Amino acid sequence: QVQLVESGGGWVQPGGSLRLSCVDSGSDFSFSTMKWYRQAPGREREFVADISWGGTITDYTESVEGRFTISRDNDKHIVYLQMNALKPEDTAVYYCNRQPPVDWGQGTQVTVSS
Image 1: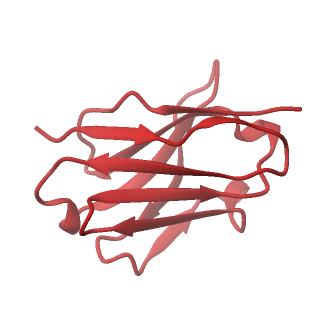
Image 2: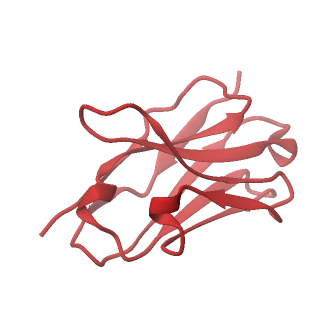
């Protein structure tokens, strides 16, 4: 059973940066498209970014385009989300998952406030 463990969240002031990491325990990680999602209080979980298995194709939701960068290390089974120029509206619990999805991890909290 694949386990996903997110980390790297925290509190940051507007304009700051964080890098999230997601470790995937599955042996077939290198062949999986990986996605980042987020869920703000009182809202549904939403797509943030994804990356193809080889890392050459990425996609972002419009609100993070140009500020967030998704990347992956297939040797380490890790997918990253570099988040720059953070805004208060980026505050949420961030999750990673595969496509198709597996069981969700616990996520990592990102709080952007002054």
